[in-house]
Length: 149
Image (cartoon, rainbow, N blue to C red; front, side, top):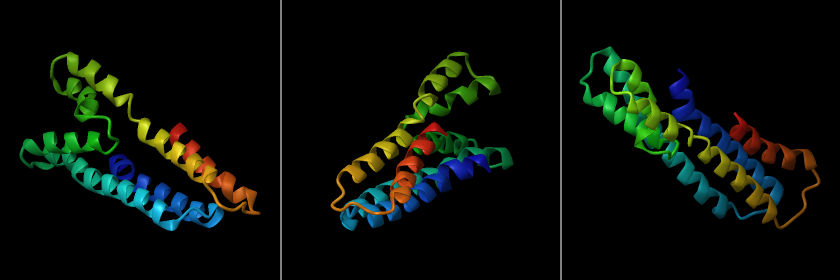
């Protein structure tokens, strides 16, 4: 459930709400925000759906599903293929997987930081000052809280 939430849903919910609010309160062109939204949705869906494949191994599917699923699971956060390697150590693989996986896994907050930068960038590019300051702060806070986790 956690993998499905993180790898297939969470980015979509945050991105959609953030895009909507930024369009309404900043006056930034809808086309600019939509282009970024399509990139986020494509990355989240393609890598998230295939990324859950590393769970298919445990229900009797061929072993290659674990490898493909793990690769795409790591790509969901654009941190590299090795990001899930820290899990391999616990199933009997060599000890270096724990270190490599941990190092690359620690890079996972980068996409959420990018979402925070995106929100601040869109607010700075706004063409009008929206009277609802709470909505602007909510949009910025969404990115920040997604990054902080």
